[in-house]
Structures are given as C-alpha cells and as structure tokens.
Amino acid sequence: MSQRDSGDGKRSPNLAGLRGQIDRLDKQLVGLMNDRAELARQIGHIKQSAGEQTYDPSREEAVLERVTASNQGPLSAESLKAIYRELISGSRAIEQHLRVAHLGPAWTYSHLAALHRFGSSVDFVPVASISAAFEEVHAGHSHYGVVPLENSTDGRIADTLDNFSRLPVKICAEVSLRIHHTLLAACDRSAIREVYSRPQALSQCRNWLARHLPAARLVEVTSTSAAAETAARTPHAAAIASRQAGVHHGLNVLAENIEDVAGNTTRFAVIGHADAKRTARDKTSLMFEIEHKPGGLADALAIPKRQKLNLTWIESFPLPGEERGYIFFVELEGHRTDLRVRRAIASLEKRCKRVVILGSYATAAPVG
Image 1 (cartoon, rainbow, N blue to C red):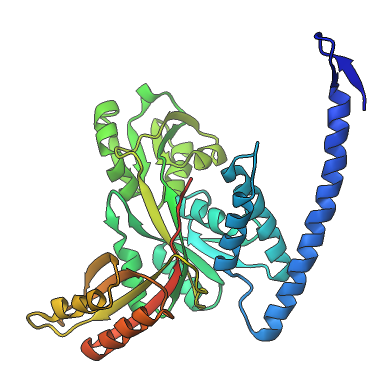
Image 2 (image 1 turned 30 degrees about the vertical axis):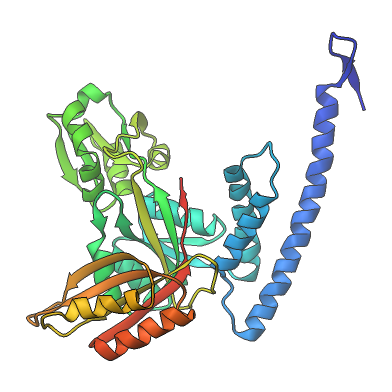
C-alpha cells in the first residue's frame, strides 16, 4: 500500500492508494450484487411455477429491516435502505418488469411515494386522476397503483375512498410519506402574481401564503407537478410542489418547507389484486355498510372491541344515489388471518349489509 508521512511520524494511505482499495471493493460488490440478482431470479422462477406474485412487500421490508439491523456505519440506516431498495428493485425487474400507476405527471408526491416503495426499476404510469389509477389496476393495464389515502393535516382523500367502494381492488402495502412543500418559480418572489398547486397543497400552506404572498391569486390544478409545469411556462407564476418537480421543470427554489404544520404526512395505499403476507405489525382495512337504523353503527363498532382489536382509523362515506345510508371505512390492528380478526370479520358479516376486506398489510414508518 502506498503511504505518506502524516506529519506526526505515522504513515497514512495516500489518495491513490485509497482509491485503489475502493476500485477493488467496487469490483467485488458488482460480483456480489450479480450473484444476489441471480438468486433472486431463481426465486422468481419458483414463484412463477407456484403461481405466486413476484412483488412481495412483506419480504422486501424484512430484508430492509435485517440489513439496517446489522449496519454498524458509517452509512446511515436511511442511506443503506435507499441503496438496497434500488438493488431489490433491479433484481425484481429481472423476474418481472412491473407497471405502477400514480397520479401524474412525474414528480408528484404520489410518484415519490411509488419510488420509495418500488425503487426506480419499474415502468411508472402517470395518470390524470385517482380514478384513472384505480381503473389502470382494475383493468390489468398496471400491476399496481399508488394512491393517496389520508393526510395528517387535511384528513381523508375522498376520491380514493369513493373508488374503493366502486372497484374490487386490494390494498397490499402502504407508504407514509413526509410532505415538504416548496415554493418554485422562474421569477423572484416579489414578481409572483399567481400560485398554482393542487387544492390540498394550497390548503396545507395557506397561512404561509397569507403571510408571504398575500396579494397572489391561488389557482387550483390537478397535481403539484402540473403546477410546476404551468409555472415554468407562465410569467409571474409560482408553484407549490416537491423540490424534485422544480428541478425537473428548471424552476428556482424560493422557499422550502412552507407547510403550516410540521410533520405533515400523507399515507398512500399500494393497490393491486393480491393479498400481502402476514408480518408482525399488520393492519387490516375493510369497509362495511349497515342498516339505516338506531344503534346500527354502535353495534358494528362493538364487534372489534369484543375481540380486543384496536381501531386505528374510521371514516364514513355517503352512499351514491338517493338511497340513505353510509359506507364505513375502518382500519384495525392485526392481519385478516389472525384468529381475533377472523372472528371480528365473521361477526360483521352477520350484522352488516355488506363487508368488503380491502387488505391486510404491514404498517409503514414515515419516510422522506
């Protein structure tokens, strides 16, 4: 090894020597990654022969947890996860090239959530609406879709809940993405006359906008990336979107983290056709319709309590048309294969007009 004097009498490696070590390690890493990919391909063949899905979110999360648990630095756990997420994504693409629908265009928060879940080695399919993402998956044009389910500031995403009541798709995973809004423009802040964004993003930044851009007109568009695209071609216009959308459209970052509530998080559902396997930290999403009579909801909600199941989310949604009544969306802790969950579902099916199991999947920690 080439060395030089560090000034204190000790010998230390020089730049060329250190780079040589890195080159040798890189060669080993490439070989090891390809060995791993070959094993993944063999697993894929076994899955296909058994009629199993290529994408296994519970297994992928288990790999990430195992890798980070053995990490001793200096790489951070998040950096290691990002590296392995892409390694898993590339290996999965050898088995099957997935199509994943999301609210477009590119670099919306839905796109970022999809990247966090699937990595970049998939075909992303940007669509114009949440309904279109559901239709893509339902029709079999895309293997999976990523749709917003709930925001910590604004609550439920009504379009998503409505589509769950309309189309028979399953939730097989979730992504909990920290939302950091950025003010983007091609002009100075003093020249801004209009601010474009999705209604939810404008709502989540309304206090900041009132303080810093009180005279600007707020204009709603279909997505945050569409806002960035509009701001890039419109004089005196700004957008509220992700930083990545600004880079993509050549906009300047005028202000970051302008959301009014720190810790602003959106939970996204990964929708598909297959159930997720059981893990140690599952939740089950379901919807049910009850008779429109006194005590009907109380009777239904007493069922999980009797089974000592914790309800983590409940939302009501009016039935379409003239018929009175509501559909209730519920999340409870546990997997649908757990005994207590099975008992609760069986009791609900006896008491309710309709019960639909949307899926059981692992609870996701916030990312981003």
